[in-house]
Amino acid sequence: ETDLIVGISCHLLDLLSRLNDMMAQQDSDLAFFTPGAWERVGGLRDQVSALRSELQNTFKTSHAAGLAGLIDRYSGQGDLISEQVEEIEQEERALGDSFVLRSGGAGKYVSTEVGGYPRLDSRAPVPLKFQDITGRQVTLGGSSFVLVRSLKDSRILCMGKSKWYVFWDSEYYASDSKCQWRLTHATDVTKVTLQYGDRVLLYNRYWPDYLMGVSEDERWVYCVYDTQAGDIRHQWVLERSN
Image 1 (cartoon, rainbow, N blue to C red):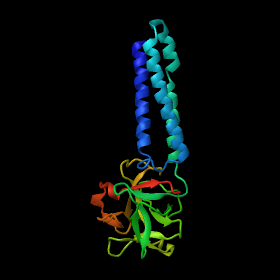
Image 2: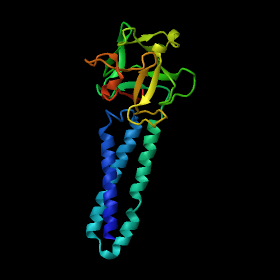
Image 3: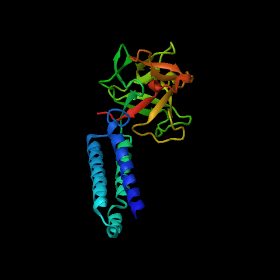
Image 4: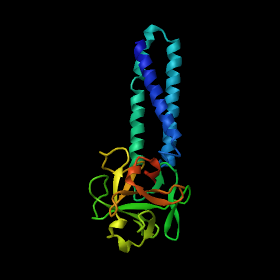
């Protein structure tokens, strides 16, 4: 019975660590969570912390005859809270009608522009959407291609003639392969469904050896050789647009 109680306590401790890790990612990998979701996560963290403290304190003052009741009272509590955490994650990761793109390494967004060339900035991200060129649902991997469209003015991101710069162009050029991109997941090649929090790579269709990334000074959206796909600066995180 003592071993069972220790196991319950360890499970609660693991769950508490998970929730603390989630809270630490509010401004990074889980920045797409809504304020309401963070309130729920914080409440569950407080609940787990209180449960574990209560279990430990009660265990210290319990006699052997009362251990079975202690196990009945706390067993399964961690699993129930874990299920609630999973539900929150699934709800928050479900992709909506728009998103913003943040460089995983630079921590900056596809933002304002100068002369049609998109800048990287920690502020004023441009709301975007992926649009499959055949009109089908957007998925990761495979041989399908997407347009990266601004929801501010319907322009699309294209790769420049110099093979380096990315620029905004009219949707008139949607059929131009320089303005079409192949989406793949940066860390999970088996993943198909696109969600908030995914880290993706964007390969140009016309120049398939190049992908959309960031310039060396991390000020501009730029194209780099696909050999740099492992550099997280050139991996784009999908976050919820405000």
